Image (cartoon, rainbow, N blue to C red; front, side, top):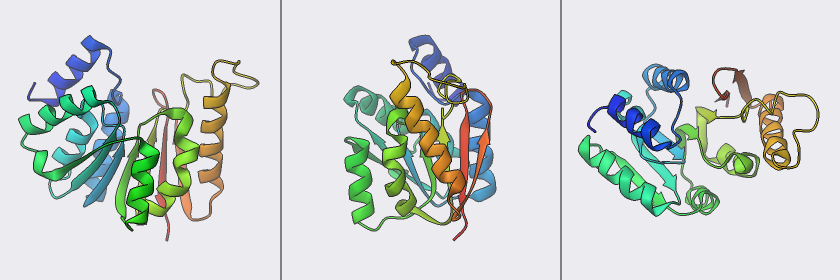
Length: 197
């Protein structure tokens, strides 16, 4: 599977969640227009989105976080096949642990792509804000959670916690004067946030 098209086909055939096509196009355009040098990704999966970012940001390095050892093993092969492995740092651990470490080390990133556990987005937010460089961009995927986030009323017991977390995440960034936050209502929703200072 040398191409992104082949990798997407594999993800579809195995029902492995990766960034959707229209959202991937926005991520690609972001890489091309912003040319970030340091990128942080939360949620590596099979390495599709990290590969996309590295291919469209030829001078960038990616730090990507993934807890699942099987996903990590697959992603390593993905990067190796494309000759991208020297520009990727894989952190195999819980995302909160990784974010705390990166923050305590004083790391800064020009682009953060958030595609991890949706119910944790709001918990990650203080650390993400510290990790985002001045004029940096945070792109969060799947923020509408199958449309439940925009639906009025109670989403039901099964989804209540995740939906509440995502609503708080979106609201916090939209109200934070240090950011311009735009909700893009395509596919399962993207939140595009630019740090102003």
